Amino acid sequence: QVQLVESGGGLVQPGGSLRLSCAASGFTFSSADMRWYRQAPGKERELVATISSLLDTTTYADSVKGRFTISRDNGKNTVYLQMNSLKPEDTAVYYCNAPHFRAWGRGTQVIVSS
Image: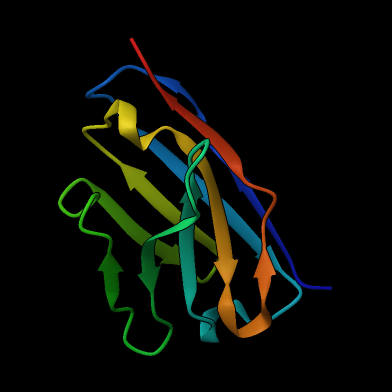
């Protein structure tokens, strides 16, 4: 069974940092493209970042470019989202996604507030 489990969310002050983790199981992680999405209250789910399997290339939403970094550790079957210079508008539930397997995690809450 394909499973994704996010962790690392929490409450952080504006300008602070968090690192989200997504532990994957049930598929060959090293060959899978991975994505992070987020959804804020009253807003649609948006794609935050992607990382490929073949070339480990990354993409980012304009709203997080320069502040967030997606990475992966194939030995740990884990994808990360390092979030720096956090803003209140980054407040959302963050979801991990494995698109080739149509798999989603349950999400982890990030609250950026003073």
